[in-house]
Length: 205
Image (cartoon, rainbow, N blue to C red; front, side, top):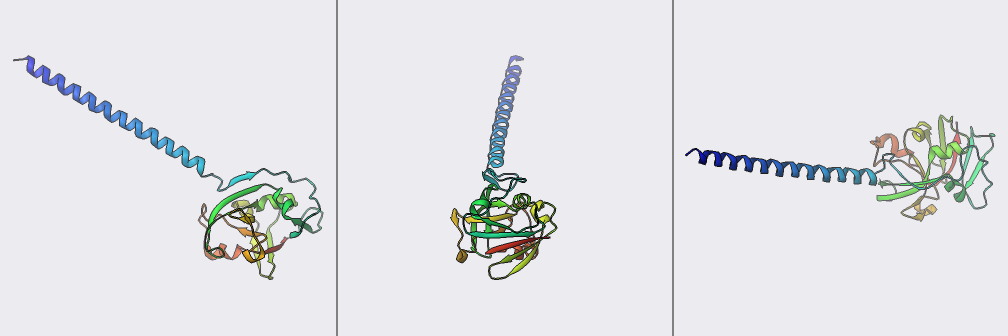
């Protein structure tokens, strides 16, 4: 008579242990998958908001070479030596190439991937690290003042290509300013006017 309850108890304990083990195994498996997923997300989404495509070969303190190609941008004002710095695409891209994707509602009308140099790196190379305001001017004489803090606070880009293609004047090039709106919550009323394309000059103040 007393054996049956013990067997039932043993059976119940075994079932409970099996259920507990199964639950723990499930939790461990879920945790492992969650960890893997987090690692994949971290690896695929750079915490800086951009991907480095090519390291810089022209760095702050290096002499900026005279352009051998078509000048696409001139930087003037508070720069090293005080003289205008004319830049061709090859020289600009020696400052280190990065890329990120954004929804370019104003020009392209859809999500695209821009590639170019970080604006802060360009300023550092031409010796304008202490800049306060960037007076930017487009080919059509549209101008907008950009706080230099935008270059320091965000990975603001001087783009030289879009979706792997050079930007012609007809496609808002050859250079343009791009903001990382996919990774930063930037007020469009404030920042959209600063997306200046067909950029031809930056005067540093």
